[in-house]
Image 1 (tube, one colour):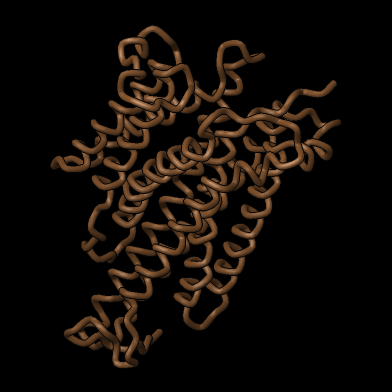
Image 2 (cartoon, rainbow, N blue to C red):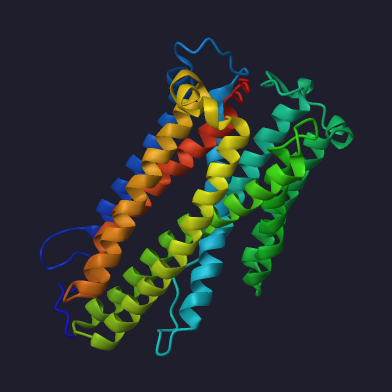
Length: 348
């Protein structure tokens, strides 16, 4: 298989005159802006006409949770994909520059913001004097919030160390803390609910983060051949193999996400009331939006898989995969919003 691609000039532009780096930056900025708008404006839209009341500052809390989830996805995906790449025979040794330290810093700030809310009795503090840091140690939610703050700090140190693989332990602590936080002890069978959330969040972080890292890796490997001005069928084959390996793993992750998501939804909304609550409660409306987005992601994933298997150039699957990661970014924003909205009432 021979690939003919535009070479890259010294100024970073292709011979076709495009500026892929600028386009990627604009697209990333647009996605971040959209995600922020979903977090800040989504609560009022979801709550409209439901008669429900949200906690003060729900938009800011949704934004912080979105940042926290995104910060969890990035290092998890890097560790996972780099491990997959090492298993491929003939794979280039080059890996994209790690973004884990930046993700850890963002996650630390988000976790700190959420901890300050917990320290004021789940109210948005108007000043530092209202934050009771010592009180965090006396409550379950406070202890979990502190655990997340410290875990992101440790994850950042691990990312900067000579053994970045050790990030897996603080990342696991964050996932465990989130699973416990989402299911208080007053809930019916909280251990089962926490177990569902643990599996759901772990698989979701790997799915989103791994796809992003796969695309970054493919771009790096392809960029090496473009700068050399040659067609490298071997590099293209390894790239296609990495994309195919991720696709197989992603199918399993999606199955686990779907199963745990359905079980969690039925615990919040009994089967007899699901259809009503999907349209009459803020939680249900947001959950419905998330289901639609995940379905769109699944369609894009199938499209990418078909092109990977049948197209003359398997790397044509790169385009639907890029669209998939954009929609997954929106899913992360909706997920952050979902955790900030009031839990629906269990109708009898």
